[in-house]
Length: 404
Image 1 (cartoon, rainbow, N blue to C red):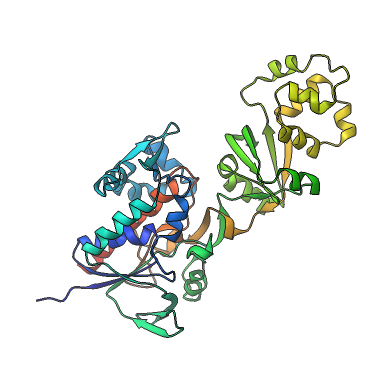
Image 2: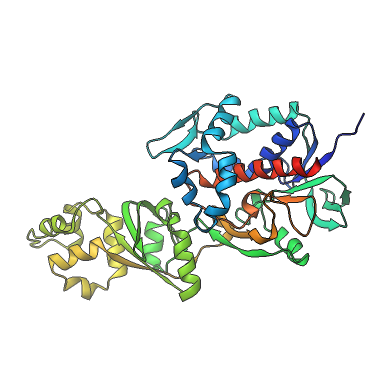
């Protein structure tokens, strides 16, 4: 009887686990190696506030969210689209639903039950896990790992999938150390950069201390004529949050080119300028500006942000119409991104030119890559996990074709 072929998967996140399921189902002997003690650490973190698996929008709109990588991703997303991902979750006993924003979540909103059911399925397929194995590179066609006790372990396999993630949240497993390994093999890798990240704003000590951790609700932000509406969060170093993440790639690229990026903040996006002008025509009397704006419906945070951006002497000279215009377009200068370790995801990675259509490295026959290691990025909203799942399926199918 022919011996089963062995496949090594490096990385026990959603990309590695999905590929392990496809390959285990196909009858291969699969071992998943990871430097952490257990699987899915970042996956569990992502589901802490509600696991956003994918999005329900039409497929063409969905694929456009991958920006410069959209054309490249068409066959991969089409191979394992959002509806198929939802059916896969249902098969694990974790029914999904579509939220009011179109985002797709498990019914109980958590990652842990889904991960537990998933690991039980992998166990039944005979997938093995090797924890505390930190990948060090290649020795010819063998893989080199350092185990928990610091010993060097050599592993031979018939095919390899690299599913090591990017460089955000390194304490959960993805530290980007693989970039050096692949670069030394002259495999093209774009530098890893923060994506869906926060940005640095040089706040005053008072503003930073007083408002760090407070949400700036229902604002519209605009950069280079691109606008998004949602909630931002003030941090000690700057600003972050969903509406910021939605424009993070544009803002990051502007900062890289120019050293800073200018953001316009509309503090009343649902009120036309003319209506706000009329509201602010009411006589102020003896009221302070803060009291006057509070009566007009502005929060203490919004008022302090206005004061943070504009010197008091300039504020004092504003007419009601000019004040309304400023509240509808408050300039905010971003001077940098926050540390990549705290970003939700990373941009950059293995270049498209380094891979064939099955996601196998041209320079390492039998070595495939998928997930966040590839050079793509997407906003939050389900696009990140969907990209990881879909490229995992594509790489697993590529491995099956390669081994046949």
